[in-house]
Image (cartoon, rainbow, N blue to C red):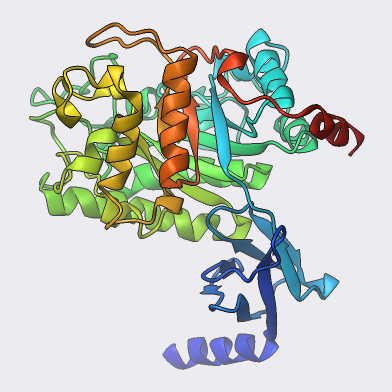
Length: 418
C-alpha cells in the first residue's frame, strides 16, 4: 500500500509545474518579504527580495502578506510581478440584525464608509446563539434552524455590493459558544456536574472545544464564508468558558486547553488555505498581560502559530480599577491601548495585531461617555504603535460619523468615477 501512495505522489509531482515570481508593494514597488504563497495544500514564503517559487498542478495561487489585501493569481495569466495593495483596516462592527441590506444600520455604516477613513466591516456570519446571517452550505446548521432568521437573503449580492465599494470584508464567526449546536448535540456539549447543559450568564450553552466534531462544524461554516468571498474570517469566543466545575471530554489542564484551541486553528488554516482568506482571532484584553492561558486556552504565542492576526478586545472599560496605574482605565483610552500592545511586542509583531476598540459608554466604573475624543485617542494609540489597523465595537452598531476622519473631496470624486 505504501508503494502505491509513493507512486501516486511521484506521478502528481511530475505533473506539477514550477511557478516563480516576485511580490511587491503596489504603492512603493518595494519587495515584500515573508508573503505567504499557497495553493489548496501547500504554502511557501517569499524571500527578502520578494521572490518565491512553488510547485503546483492547480490553476490558481493565493498570496497573503500582513498589512495587505489578499490576492488571487490565476496561473494562466502568466503574471510574474505581483503587486499587493496595502491596507490599514479601519472596521466597524455590523450586528447580525443590522446586516439586512435594507436596514437603517447598514445604510448609516455605508454612508460613513463613503465619507470617511472607514474601509472595512465586520459582519456576524454566526452569532452567539448559533444563528447564521445567511443560508450556508452546512446541512447540519440548516437542519438545526441556524438560517431560519437569516438577515442576508443573497450573500453573493451582499459581497458584490461591498466589493463595488472597495470594502474589506470580515466574517465574524462565534466559535464555541453556540446554543443551537449544543442543544442539538448533547453528547459533546459542555455540561455541569448535574450532567445538564451548562449555561453562561447569557443563558447560552457551549460546545466542548476538546471534541473534534465541534471543530468540524464551525470550520465548515467558516469555509462557506471564505468561499462566498469574505477577505477575512474572525473567530470569536475561540476559548473555553470562563467557568469552573464543567464536564469536558478531557482534563481541563492549561496544556490541554491550549492544544485544543491550537488544533482548531490548524484545521481552520488548512481548510481555508485554498481560498486565500486571512484568519484573525478575538481574545480577551487581559491576555496581553498574562503569561498563563487565563483558564480559557488563549495564549498569544500559540494562537499566532496559525492565525494571521490577533485581535485583543482592548476595551478600556474591561480593565479593572487601578490597571495601568490609573483609577479608571476608561478615563485613559490612549494608554490602555498603547501599553497593552506594547506589552506583547516580544510575542508578536504589532503589524499582526488589530485590536477591538470601544465605541460604547463605560459600563463598569466612571460611566464615561465614549465620544469623539475617547475614540480618537484609541485610534491614535494604534497609529503610534503601528498596528495593522483596528475594529470598532458598538453592540448596537451605532456610530457617529464625526468620530472618523473625513475623506478629501477630490478623493471622493475620484472614487465615484471608478
